[in-house]
Image (cartoon, rainbow, N blue to C red):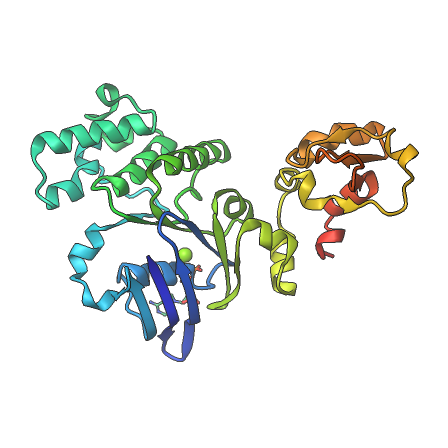
Length: 319
Ligand code: ADP
Ligand code: MG
């Protein structure tokens, strides 16, 4: 769907984006992450040509983006910004309707679409469509920012730290909403964040940038279990214990080697899909937990000591 081939962006003598290559699949939630100034926004804006690339190629549906008509292409790529960027003098309906208006949709179709989108994010159209942005909370305004980007049903949506200006509770709610929405709409989403927890929660795959270069691309699981280098490990080290506790028993259980069968039977058995969060309580009373894969003789176990040191970063290579 979107492919970067050895793409660089050069400002003066500085490479803001340095020889970046990746492929984003249709319907994928692809997260760009990295420290401030690593080139996330530049990478994102090159996709819809708000910034021109210096070297390499970007393909959109196998065609170089330079072959597309810029304004038409932008209509087919939704864009959500960090700062809530609704037009204050326009109603919610008028804000959402912008791209459909430009595309000259029929009035009735636009009105239906606005109501459909408001319903999708749990905002009653009757109540909200004629309000002005200032009459909504920050979280509600950013919900409008998200559905405005979806208004004309674009196949691709770019989001640049869309939730980072929100308070933690609104932020969590919008993350949950977007994940649920995505199961229905299956857009190709390129999502920028500097927050590793948000990346792990939202991304099908994550691309970690550092000084314009790709450090690692992979699923959240691959990041946790196979961090490629020290930079990746230390970036993951920022993860909150709360997120780590969402990791499943099956991801960290170790082959049983030393324990005799008699001893194994005294430990509780838990399914591999249970999260650490869930088995934490059991570990207060039991030295270890056996993984229940339905085997006659269990093969994997996790000890209290292992889980504690895992949460402390020891078995993840974080020092
Ligand atoms: P991020 O979004 O990851 O914080 P950016 O993509 O905004 O990073 O910026 C990447 C690097 O490029 C930074 O060092 C930034 O200072 C530099 N940069 C961004 N825009 C410009 C510009 N218009 N002129 C010169 N340097 C820029
Ligand atoms: Mg940025």
